[in-house]
Image (tube, rainbow, N blue to C red; front, side, top):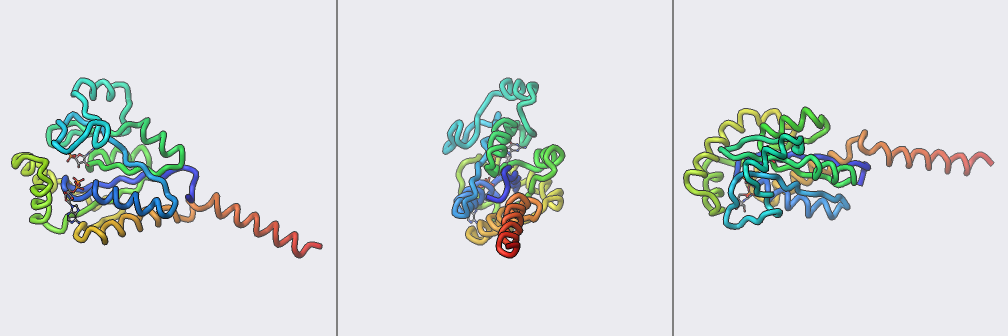
Length: 218
Ligand code: ADP
Ligand code: 5GP
């Protein structure tokens, strides 16, 4: 909309914090502003949950396949989380950004730091659950993880809060509508940064100057 290259957004939160839900909501709302976006599909060695599909929620791969991709530098970033490997395909992200499509990465905090080093313009957003009790309840209600996996994710959340202050934006995912509005608003605001608007603003200024000269030079 405002720039020829798409913008890269990282959305992090503890597992169950609401990243997937909020990104999908924000993408729908951004489409109404003619902003095209893409939700990057990561590769992982984690087994698929009952409701997940290969190539839709993740590319589910073996540890050997993952390591082979890593050796070939096919990941923009990767990290180990709760005993499983997760990585973002460099090609998938670059392909969209170069076509002017925004990309959302749903990744944990170690990966977010790697991307920031490689792509300084990335916008990092951290989603907070309103409380411990609510996060636990959402993980239980999602019915996708065992009690042991839920415990590991809650323990991991505590570590993630430790670095969440380094993110550009924070959203508390209490009421879904408000949190989705906040995420959409952040993305819109980033599109309206002066430097990102420059190509379009230059066109307006040039046209203005031309019209002014045409009208008053005769
Ligand atoms: P993540 O992608 O961060 O792991 P999800 O988007 O899968 O989290 O959300 C975890 C669960 O919480 C899902 O069942 C989702 O429907 C629910 N959820 C997310 N946000 C809210 C909210 N604001 N209010 C109530 N339930 C929510
Ligand atoms: P889950 O197993 O709950 O789907 O994801 C566990 C964690 O891994 C979440 O915090 C999620 O954001 C993160 N994650 C998912 N894909 C990637 C990825 O490609 N890279 C990194 N670094 N983290 C990821």
